Structure formats: C-alpha cells, structure tokens
Image (cartoon, rainbow, N blue to C red; front, side, top):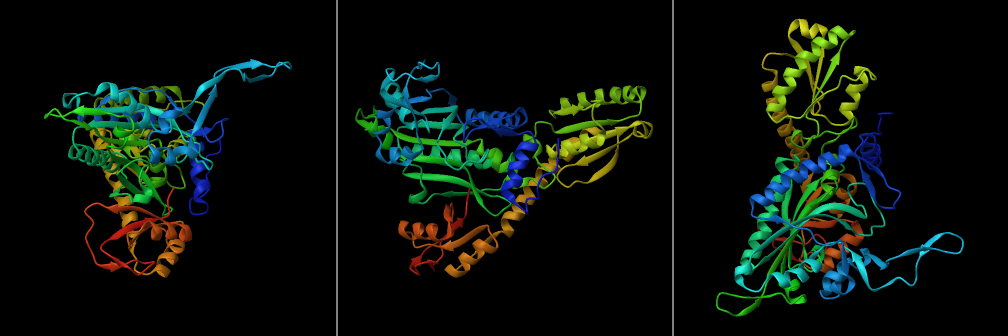
Length: 490
C-alpha cells in the first residue's frame, strides 16, 4: 500500500480525501453520497460516543430510540421545519419488489404506500408526536432524552465525514415546563459540546448564536460551536437549539401546570455527528498523515520490536508484556506489533500515517542498555529514555501531547482571526488569508444574504458574551453595536 499523500498546501481537498482513505478511516460506498466507515475510523467514533454518552448521562439524560421512517404528514405540521428540510428528504413510496417478465427485479407498482414515509433527516416530528402521549402534567416534565442514530439528508456534493447523505449522530430532544428551563438546557448542552471539543478533540471553538438566516429550521434560537480548519475555513462542530413551543403547538403537546392551567411544552434539540471526525482530521493532521489527540486515539502507544533472530524477539517480548500490563493498568491503549511480515521502517510509516501519538522502538541493544526509543507523533521528535519508570513517563507524555495539539490549533486560530472595517479589505482577506473575520454587520438578513452571495462567506456566529462596540456595517455603513464572526465554511 502506498503511504504517500499529496501535500495539504498543494491541494487541501485532495489531501483530506487521500488521508481518509490511506489511513484506513473510511472508503467510498456503492451508494452515491454515502461512505463505509472502516474499523479504525469507527473506533474513533466509538470513543467519541463513549465520552459524550457519559457527559449526557451525567447531566441527567437517558437514551431512547425512535423509528427511522417518519410519516410525510408529520412534516407538514411545522411549516418552517418542512421548508428547511424539504429539498433533502429521501422518500419511501413502495414496500415490495417483484420479478418482471424478463426476470429483472423491479418495484411492484401495486405495493404503493397509502402515505409516503420520509427517512429521518432529523427526528423532531416523530419525537414530538410521541411526547404527546407521554406528557399530561408538570409532573411528567422535564423529559431529557437522547438518541444515537443515523439520518439521511440527500446531499448533492458530498465529502467523507464532512457532508454525506447518510451520517451517524446523536440528537437530544428535551421537553420543559418553562422557557427559562429550556433555554438553560440549550446553553448547558452547548457547554457540554464545547468542553468535549476542547478537552477531548483538542479543538478550540467559539461559542455563539446563529443569525436568524442560519438558524435550525423551526428553532427560535440556535447556539453553536465554530472551529477553524487548517485551510482557513470554518466548520460548525455542534449545535443546540431552543425550539420554543413551536413543535408542541404543531403536535398539540400540552401539560397541566401547578396551577392546573393548560400550557404548551417548551422544547430543545441538540446534536453532533461523525462530522467531528472530519474536524479532528482537518484541524490537526499533516502531510505525513493523521495527528490524533491521545484521548481519542484508538491506539495511544505502539511498540515495535527491532530484532535479528527469535531469541532477541523473545527477550523483547518478555519485557514488553510487563510494560503493556503497566500501561493498560493506567487506562492507556497499547499495541505490540511483532508481525514478521513487515519491516520496522514500514511499521513506523504506517503508525505515523494513522496518527498513533507515541511510538516505542526497542531492540537488543536497548535491552542491554535498559533503554527504549520514544517518538511522539505531534512534533515528530525522538528521544532515548530509561526503561525504569517508562510507563509513568509515557502517561505524562500523552498528557503533554494532548495539551500541545490543542495549543497549536489555538495559536493557528488566533493568528487567523482578524478585525476588518471595510468591505474591500473583507473581500481581499477572504481570498488572500482565509480565516475568521470579525466585522460589523447592520443586523439585517438582506445584508447578510448579499455578503454571502457576493463572497461565499457566512456569519458563522454572534459570539456569546460579545463586547458591545459602536461601528459601521462593512457593506451598508449603517450603525452596528457589535462585531460578528464571518468565514467561508464547510
């Protein structure tokens, strides 16, 4: 297998695609717009799932599962929601196949569904139809439910892990007695996502609100975390939505409050997807392959023996058995690669490509000297260290690597975030030095749309706790009270 990949500076898009495939993360599917997530890529998603699932449960949420197929009539009940997803829906119209006179498999036209079914692009409609039966009184609230699932959004231009027709995600759907509780939930889950992004993905994010133009279809307010990739494009890494009473009214979900009066329930929804794996790749990796933060790396430490004959290998293997047990006792995943089908140099390149944070090489001379060679993936530096106390040294090194990967990404974002006051400078920087641009906007959807059409840049968010600052809109010159964050985005 050829390990070489194109330089990201030469062609960032091709670099990303080649890296996904050659690092054994995923491959193209025979179904257009879909992907096959391979075991190495899926193991990263499993780690993400495990961490997030615990975070959700620690904040009082429980998991449930709702149907993949949603009656079409459900979508017509919330007008802005159906409008937002109508062009992306895959529709099931028949329930049977048959053989024609030529022996070919065809759709049985007599097996047409009475009502078409939509493959879920998101589950608000079927969940709120369900909640109607679960909620009668304030005693039934809050409902704090999460679902791990797949969804389908019929994308025309796809890229693995970033934008595929089918993708994996989690979607939280909660019901509350008051608007204040629902807003608090929305903000809490944004904080959960930001915590996960920064402390596990090693990905610095900006917490903010979406503009009305960019809100989730059917939401009163959408909160988001925005990250900057190494090509200067933004990536929305998670969203949390305050849905108000829109879905409760659409599906007639009422409850008797403490005073015995009927009121509509207040709702939230929130989600992150396998797009986070795309963010992980694009924020940290280099021309040699993946750079994985240790906390999410499927293999945190790989040990490669270097030997000439079986006796040397047996001595190394005996030592490694104890070291591996010590590392595993510290919760560190370790692989001892003693395959005799590949040379050490091939293995070094393979694990560099796969982003394994720490590589340990040990030969017969190391055994005599009581040393090993340690290589770290983030800096590509090597050092010779003593075998004594090695497990503790590796444990500290993994923490250092995690911190360093975050610091590097944070420095990149800071260096590529600029304040701009004129439209000419705004357009020039978008082409010459992509990144986050902090600029004044007059607050109108018309101005936002015109900037998007003319430059392909969108308002990524209005940062939370944004300092109020008098200024003039870069496009119209009208008064503005704060800067917002613009960027071209995935």
